[in-house]
Each structure stands twice: as C-alpha cells, then as structure tokens.
Image 1 (cartoon, rainbow over the protein chains, first blue to last red):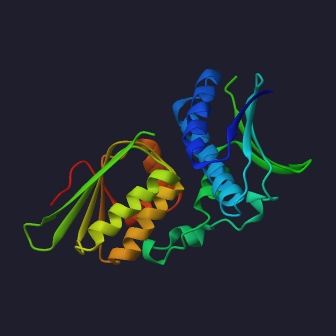
Image 2 (image 1 turned 90 degrees about the horizontal axis):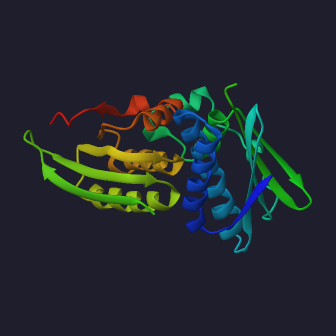
Image 3 (image 1 turned 120 degrees about the vertical axis):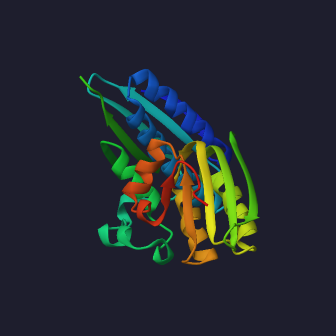
Length: 140
Length: 111
C-alpha cells in the first residue's frame, strides 16, 4: 500500500481531499464516483480532526493509505485518536430525511453521505489505531 | 484553500428583502464557518428570500448542508431558499439528504 501522512489539523482536510481526488483520477474512477469518494473522505477526515484531535486537545496524524487492484480502489485512514466507530452512531432514516428543514436535527448527515457514496465503508480498531476503510469498485 | 463568498441585501420590488450570497470554490467544514457568518449577517435584515448563487461552487460537504438548515432555523420557516445553477453532484447530495424539497433550484432568481 502507498502511504502519505498528514498532520491532524483543519488545514489538512483540504489537502487530503485534493490528494484523494488525484488518486481517484489515476485509478480511472468516473466523475461521479470521484466526487462521492472525495465527499466521503472529507467527512471522515473532518470528524477525525475536529472530534478526534481538536476537541480533546490531542495532537496526531492521519495516515492515508491506498491500494489499487483490478477490481477496486481501497483507501484507508489511520489515526491515533480515541476509538470511534462512525457506524456505531445512529444514521438519519427515511423519516428524518423527509422532515422540513426547520425541524431537522443538525447531525449525522456526514456519515450518512459517506456510507451512501462509497461501495463499501468499514471501520476497525487495530493496535491502538482507528482504521476507516473506503472501497470503490472499478469498472472491469 | 479556494473558497470565496460575498453577499448583498436588496429591497424586492414587491416589498421585503432579498439576500443574495455568491459561493465559489469548495464548501467544506472550514469554509462553512464563513458561510454561517454570512448567513448571520444577512439574517439581521430578515430577508424573505435567500438566493445562493452556486454556479461556481464545485464541492459541498455536509457542513454546507448544516448551514442551509441553520439559515432556515435562524431566519424563519417562511424563508424561501433559491439555489441558482448548482452543479449536479451538489444537487445529488441535496437529493440524497432530503433537502432538495426544501429549496428551489433555478437558473435565475425569479424576483
């Protein structure tokens, strides 16, 4: 796997997004899939920086790993903040999404868009690290 | 980072006020803070219509959606939100999150 390390700061979110956009382009993802992957990584990187590192006052990195096979492009984020499984949180359901704006709760949309935008999203905690895994299938 | 925002508030022909905000570049969690400040600024004039020119906005994360929700909650449920020429991926995001039915997507502000 290729790997690149970004400091876990708000300034990195933009850089990670552009780094992933380049990877998506070289992997041959179409425009829509590239955008969806970019959106997914932006949401997760934002959560790691704001809630994993900034809020508790911790310093740390986000290691961005990626691997491409004939079938798929896989991107993995590794960070050393407290264990946080994005999928453990309740996502908005159909009923929530049908509510008018003025009655909307403000949270949960980012992870919803992440899960919806990639072909597979998973989380694991390995050796003191959060691993957020994004998988995009490639047209064969 | 590439994000630019500017706003103005004008009197509408039929009374009331129209706030127009131009958004350019990428709207992520960082730039959404600027967007929210701009909404707070125009909210003081209690506009009836909020026009968001999105033709040059190439990316919008959930933080941007939260500001849309915030604007309706801040200014009031009678506020009409017009999105002028949003790019397709942004329309898709609004659709997936059920926000599309709370805004009007237009080529030009009809007022």
